[in-house]
Length: 110
Length: 114
Image (cartoon, rainbow over all chains, first blue to last red; front, side, top):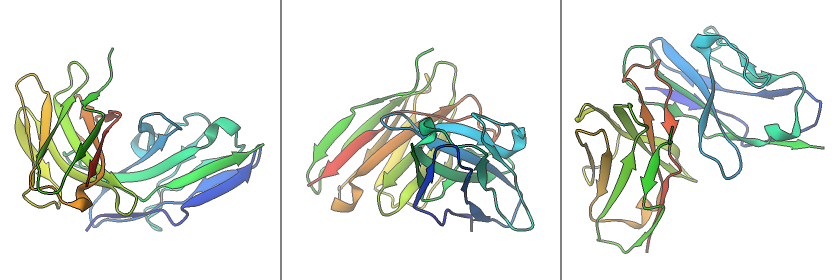
């Protein structure tokens, strides 16, 4: 069965400090991993996906198949990063079915 | 281009009633997925449609159904509503059914069952 775990419901850091949002997954096949973000009063939107290996808004995420993790990191947090973050996976071949984690609410304190 | 639109945005129903929610995808997108979001269960996949065919289904009872029209617009229906069906229902559209296609989410329809 596919499962995504985000162990922290809430995460609070100071502006300028490093941020790491944890995501662990369980899936027997080869998954595709994503991070979605929802800013206050906005729609859920894709932040980044592991297959692209890109940095968006200073965030990066590395897929660690050995530890089955896909943690989201940013070296210097900014106040506008405050949002709800969801880790999600889908199977590698076909299908748009996303399995989401429970989400982590990130608050950046000034 | 216009984003994914969902109607209605808010809905109040009573137990036993049925409800139909509508989703208009981004122009050119042919894949539509539906998700239920609740505080307890989080975001859960309901079903996915592509070219008017249901391609994937989540673990929801048969009271939850959907369809897609030739213009890619989609509707989902919930019959015999229960209190636990109160949730935010999100629709997402994508150009392709492939996992590589970015999903764009709508604002959601908030359903309250009394």
